[in-house]
Length: 195
Image 1 (spheres, rainbow, N blue to C red):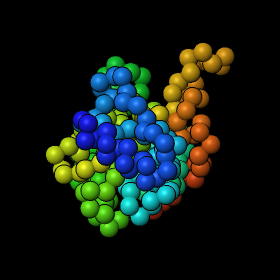
Image 2: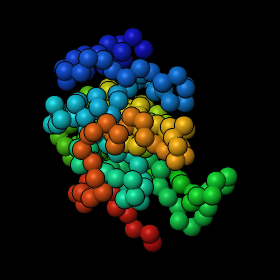
Image 3: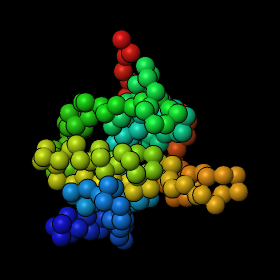
Image 4: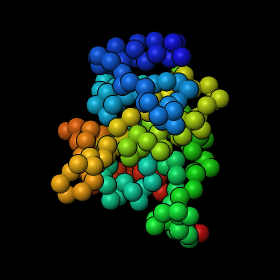
């Protein structure tokens, strides 16, 4: 673990960022690499070293269409995919299934960008919660040296004390003044057929 922390500090020092995001308290949000970034740190790392880093948005493309996108990411490779044929077992939403090709697609994206497995890989989901660390876990054992999770994700943390009800208005990519919009780059979004 100490080596991972030293690697994170060295990588962030190269980007000009002062510190890495602290390790999440929830073990379900922790990774074996122990490497975490805020959205602002991820932006700094990616924009200061664009040819040396792979920045992956792991959200479902339909979700991106409604919540926004940043063209700063290199590629969208969803960790979970919507299954439009059935409902979730315990929530009033459509079911989602793991993308069985996620790890292979991340490795292919590294290769397409001319990077090897020593390159930093940044994973960003909606809030840094339920898909960040699990998507990183699927990359274990593949020889990747630096896998970072954006702890506040694209939409940020929910403020439960918001007068309009719970809203994702705390931190995250959208709430940090970083570039984003609703226009999706067709060269970066994940497309699939529904045969």
